Length: 110
Image 1: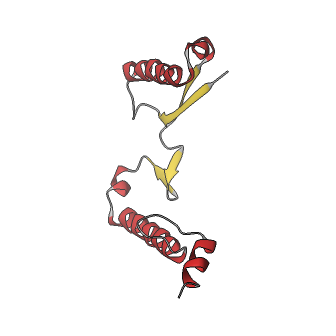
Image 2: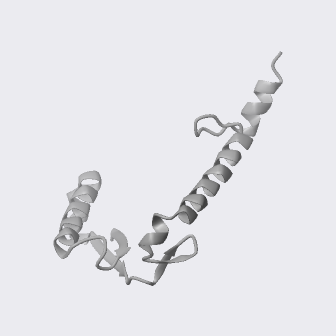
């Protein structure tokens, strides 16, 4: 039995009408890929987390002021710097990492 699980913040992300549309469209998309045989067995579950019971970067949400603050921008910038350094360390360019074997072969060429 396929289960499609959607998680969102209660009363913030979607209206009841939008949730009904999500259920219909997610099922239709799933069936379009796997065939009509799965329709009767496809479950769509929407889990809603109440406000104040989730967070981003260690900050309880919804704290909309935090999301547009310089502090949050700094957290994102720092994470991007860390990821960029990791990609560069792997020899990647433009988001593509190069394997150790590929680098070794390239470096051994005259």
